[in-house]
Structure formats: structure tokens, C-alpha cells
Image (tube, rainbow, N blue to C red):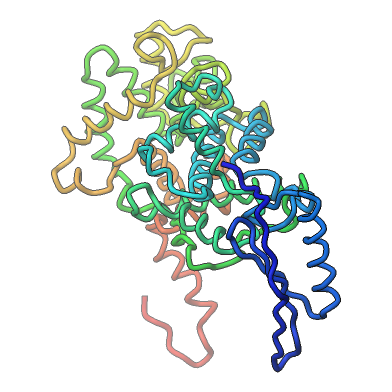
Length: 462
């Protein structure tokens, strides 16, 4: 769809005399679409109008969106949002993780649909999002798009608004609303909205660096489409007590074939506080397991599950360095004596080699997230009481890590040490687990009771 036209009409300059002075507005239309430009003096308005007349008399086409001759077009007017988004994806692809690639594609999909000249009503909304997310904004699959997807993307390319659209607050507000809304019209989770806004902000900064945009049009501070504040602290109700963990692990250990291995996997999350993607990557040689007492796990890589469509080698998992650490860095974590015994038994029963995975999948590869999540769901259903099963307690596998870190903090381990073992920063650790620290109130109250006592007042009897 072309946005240019030779059909240009000019009108008399409008003069408005107000309390704050006189203004002069040049009026013209491009293919029936009216435009205007206001100046504080008549000569400036006449000069601008003369420039437009010269361009029209020279047979120059005008842009229907901006109303300006094509020779006046800025980089923002010459480039559509869709074209720029593709350029950004290609530039960023090799520099970001597979999970970041996926999240970037999701954010760009929402923005692209919001910046179309018209709604793609001839296509199914789900198919439109899939075409953008899984093909257009996936550099590895773009050339593999089937014919029906190419048809959809061709329509989007023709109907994408120019980058100059970002200068209009109406379109900016529409984009902000799109990021806050799911396909069914419901409000998106605050964490998702915040993540996608951060991604869009990076894209806009890239546009400014490439001189496509002059300023960042995204709203600063609070706005009407702002998402609810994301809850960083975990829900205390999701934590498991020792009896619940024992029953769950026992049920999992009794499963045929892989029960022993999955039992050890979940025990590692509970006793050592590893993230699931870190435990999946753990190998036998990284575990120091004495015959008795405490051992140590040396965590050095993670294998997050992001999907084969987003990794360079086409595998489901992506090998990554530890979260928040320099490339190649390691993190020693103490292994509880009970965990040491469990892992020693696993290595002996399965005959694991030093370089082998501790928790391999049934076919020998990396343990799939779909497998351990399914087993955990079944264990909760089989073991927990009905009211516990319907509650948040242990609803996610990750809650085993939360339970471990909370136990360490409640046992008096200094936050700095817990953060080091957990692979978090101290501020993040405290913000996440502050509501779960219990059992220390009486001691803390006693510490401050004396120092705050005023002279001449009676102390509370102990």
C-alpha cells in the first residue's frame, strides 16, 4: 500500500488573533487528507507554503501521513516500524541469549500489531501473532516461513506505520496499552509488562543511536497504562514444611525407572537451593561427596530450557554461564549430609562416570523440564491434602529453592553468605525473602528493649 500521492490541494493561510498573540496556519491536503502547520509570523508561514507549492509544481509526490514532499522526509518517515524491528532483531541476535531472543520477539509482536494502519481482520489474530513471533522476529526461521505466513507478513509489511508515528502521543499510548493487554483483552501480568517495556525502551534507544528518532517518546514515570507494581517478594504460602518435602520425595523415589534420579534432583533443589536449570547441568565431577558429613557442589553452568527454535544449534536447552556472574565463574554450594548420602547412592546405583550428568534424562540427555514438572504435579496431587493441593504450597518446582533459602535465612545464616551460595545479590535476596524470615522476633525485640528505654520509666518485666 503506497502512502504517496500527487493529488495536493492548498488553502488560504488561516490567521488567528488570540490573547497570547497572532498565529498563522498553513493548510493543505494530500489525497483528501488535511494537514496544517502553525507559525508565529506571517513571513515564516508564507515561506513554508511557498516551499510546498514549489515541490507540488515540480511534480513531486507528497506523503499522505506527514503531508510533506518526499524530499523532506526524515529517516523516521522513510522507514516503517516493521522494517526497523527486523533490522533491530538481526543486529541483536548474536549478542543475546535464546531466552532473550524469545522475549524480544514477543514484545516486538505486540508493538507491530499496534502500529498497523488497519486491523488485519482477514487473518486469525492468533495466526498473525504466530507469524510475527515465530518467523518474522526469529532470524533462524524467517526464510523457512510457509506460504500462508509469508502472505500475512507481506500484508503487515505494506500496512506498517512509519517510525515517525512515534512522534504522535496517540500511537504511543496505543502501544503502551497493547503491551499491557493479552490477546483475550485481559490485563497482562505486571512482570511481563515491565519486561516488554524494558525491551521496547532498548529498541527505541537503538533508533535514536541510528538517528531514526530524535528523542525517546516513551512515557516517563507513571502513566495511565502503567502496569501494577510487580511483586518481587515470594508468597510465604508457597513454602513447604519438612514433613511435606519428605512425603513428596518419598513418593517420587518410589516411581519405577527414573524415580531414584528424580528424587535426587528434587532433593538437590531443597537441600542446596540450586535453580532447576543449574541442577540439570550438574555433573558428577562437580560434587564433592565424603563418606560422612557435609559435601560441596561446584555450580558452573546452567541449561535453561528455551526451545529449539531459538537456540543456534537447534537444541531445546541453551548452555549459559551462571546468572549474574562473569563468564566461566563458578559458585560453591554446601551439600547437606542428607544430600551427600542421596547423591552417593545415585552415583553408585546408576554407575555414573565423573563427567556424566547427575540427573540425565531417560534417554541419556539433559533432563527435560516437562518431565520433572509433570512428576512434581503428580506428586503434589498424590501426597498433599486437598486444601494443601489447592493452595500455593509447592505449586512450582522452584518453590523447593525458595524453601531452602528461607530455611538458611531463618537459621541465622548471614544474608551475604546466603546470597553467595544462592547466586543472588544481597538486595535481591532480602527483597525476595524478607516476608519469610521468622523465628527471630523475640531475640530482636530483646536487643532493642534496653537501648530504647528512657530514664525514669519502668522496664517491662521479663
